[in-house]
Length: 267
Image 1 (cartoon, rainbow, N blue to C red):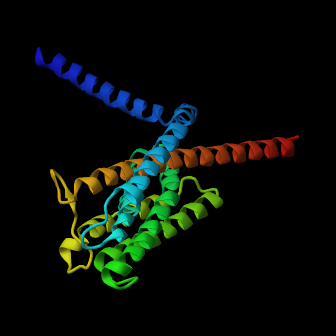
Image 2 (spheres, one colour; image 1 turned 60 degrees about the vertical axis):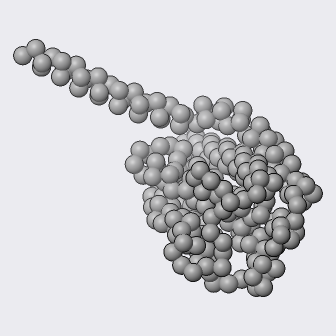
């Protein structure tokens, strides 16, 4: 019998802990609290990202040496690699937000996914354009139906489709639609395909130069590339926060207009 009260206390404690975690998670989803935090972070992220990305691009253009085989064309990697990283990272953010929306019904998850889609699509397109510019002198062709290039093109089309679905759901006033979230999760299948395509199939694209614990890249390129990636990532984060603020403001303005229309109708 002495064990029964202990089990009861343990169960009560576990239930209370789970409930407090749930309350805490949704506390961060409070629009007023989020907007207050977003206002504080948006400008610093953008400013720091622009400065860091600008310095790294300046180093890539003026400071980094020409590569032995590719010459000056290799300098485009300071834009191409961060763009590829953020193109994939943007959809990863959509997938995580979509899972959070579907499982935990987090109030801001769908807004976050929608906010990340447009900058993610931009960086995916930038990756394709810079890759084509780099491929012309390196491979002798603007485009080849290579596994890496093709899967990245598919990612860009996925972004376009997601934006259309999300805009349609918002335009219809169906804030509870799960279609964009389900599409965001399904589209995540393409992310590992992009990453491992150079290993799974014969590819003109070079294998990863940076892996966990080691790098085959010369230091004068490596550190500048890392700085550019961090800088563009900060810009990406600032844009996502700014877009989330805009989407929330539009929703609040629309809600006020509807409320006034109903009050005028009742009067």
